[in-house]
Length: 318
Ligand SMILES: O=c1[nH]c(=O)c2[nH]c(=O)[nH]c2[nH]1
Image 1 (cartoon, rainbow, N blue to C red):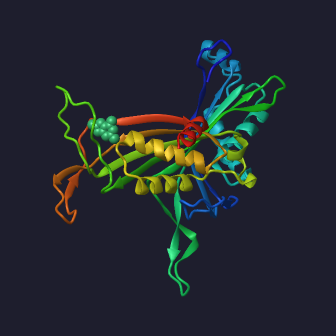
Image 2 (cartoon, rainbow, N blue to C red):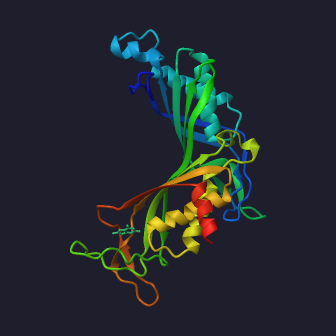
Image 3 (cartoon, helix red, strand yellow):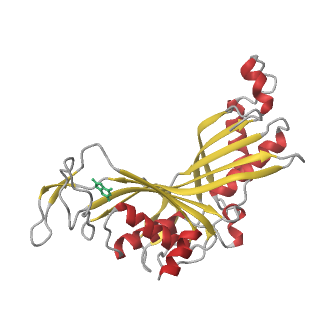
């Protein structure tokens, strides 16, 4: 976040835990790679980070004048109380509503940047005569992958708020494919000790990000073009299952192409991945029985962004 003279300047509150109940249920269009089509919104929980910026705050830094400071403690209260008023179904929409309301309330604030991590809760399944049914009251806090979202709202000349940037993503997806991945054909020289592998137990950590052509699609699920992190997860799993991977580089490329194919509303997808390939202690026998352990550091990583132009080129090539 920058002041008009180009300097970085902001302040805010981190780790604002917001457990909102009975938000609007979310429904998304089905995709072939996933059985996930929505959630009930009974527990709509987030860890939010909120920052404010703008030239008005210069005197607080340069002169110790707090006259225009909204205390970060008040920011936390604002977020918690205003979360009650949100009547949408998406994390992105919640952030936009909070940010807009803050800019409306404090006319001297030039910009707000909000990010959130969705805290996942899975419905407890009860056994019943007709098979398992969701409790609707009891939820299980789950670990693992989660939605993240970030947006910046900037005050423009007429005083209104404009959405300057928006990105959504899926963090900390960990996937293991026990067979069907290789890594070979890389440069072999005086520094090479890694043997070629025709089949390795590929364990990866993935962070997938996406940007919409029209960010309004992220804010309002009623438009029918919201991209759900659970569908992104399922699509990534499906590609990992279906394709032989010669490297993580090519695997994330393939996942990216399929995401762009499936979600025409996305302009860009991004990846950061980490290689956590299990280390063999007892090599697999003819039945695949083996013992692995955690790899030792250091770890390899990849980063990639892809746009619709990559998908067009790929489809022309075919
Ligand atoms: O998928 C991989 N890509 C690499 O670039 C690499 N390098 C390495 O040592 N192992 C791997 N695996």
